[in-house]
Length: 316
Ligand SMILES: [Zn+2]
Image 1: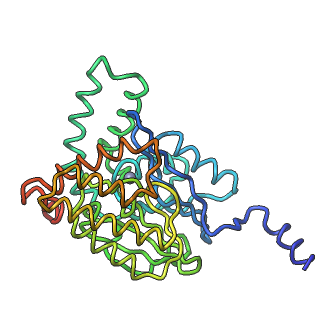
Image 2: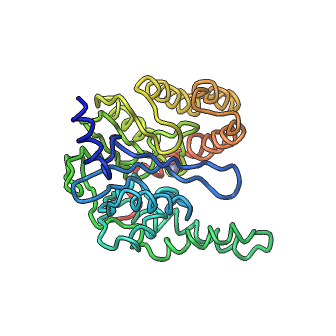
Image 3: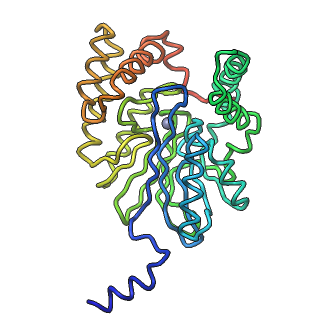
């Protein structure tokens, strides 16, 4: 027993005992916007980084971890193209130019629509004297990525659900079409029974900005069919299977309420009640405002608008 421990100590200098390393993304209440969670996995050819955050601090934390481990970053997997999950790609690619980027091709539709519209908004804010220097720096960082879309595009597009070998490590890679975005990627590690699902689960409130609610619902069914015991959401703390089931019920209730004739306050109250376990006091006001916004824009808008993200955004 003692020898085994010694052997572990000797060989374990740069090995990771945990099945994954989590760099939690923050959800600040001011202009900064959230960082998605980053999950780092070990692989034979180096580290695999699942989502890269938005802020320079978050990207730096990823680079620092790789340095501390004395391992190169071999691959990035992006759960989806939202900038709170992809902005750090460029920082990592600067440090590790050989890195392979695995993501869906949904970025192409985003570039012609959502991100293009967002860019005009960014220019307006940059011209506004009320915008702080800190905020300007963040806006310019995001605009740079939109202006150089190769920093967001996959080098290795994920086009279907399959077992893939990434950086020498086999992983079950799932593609959820028309869910939180046109193409959401999530992975399952059978060895540790961990599902890493990006924004298909966000504890405090589903970020429905580019969502197709029914496709999203279907993807939750696909996740439920996998025998995971641990689930890492796109934002917020790690969940158990029971947590996932609770969140899924809250999601279904919210969408159902949104489509009923119940008043909006009832639906917002319902979300805050059903998802109470995942909402801390600090974020309660933020969550109420976000839930109200998604009811208006995604669940109570015109039928065309409600279906807007349920079809390809760019003709291929
Ligand atoms: Zn996100």
